[in-house]
Image 1 (cartoon, rainbow, N blue to C red):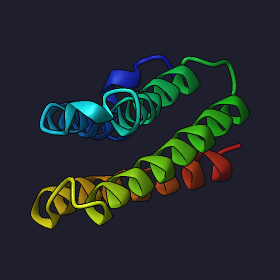
Image 2: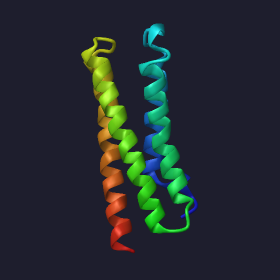
Image 3: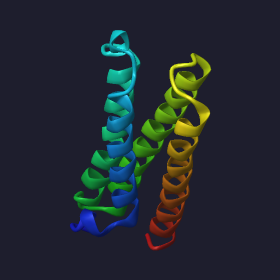
Length: 119
């Protein structure tokens, strides 16, 4: 698998990353080296690991990188929920992002399942 750009999970996770970057511009500047930095890093990690895995030589390696992407997704979800709990972002802003996270999670699960079946 070399055309990671054709993967719907990669495309959706890129949208998620773009939305996280937009959100980060609205957060308090004193969070620049805290939550802002953290949500940017883990959101970028999701499509990056999907792309890296797709570029590897085996399905087993691809599965490994999908697992890493899943971990980064869980980290991002936690941090988004924390932003809401700290009253830094309203629920109506966070919920659409969490919905995209949920979509990416389901896509990741389905792709992993498909790769395992075809091994």
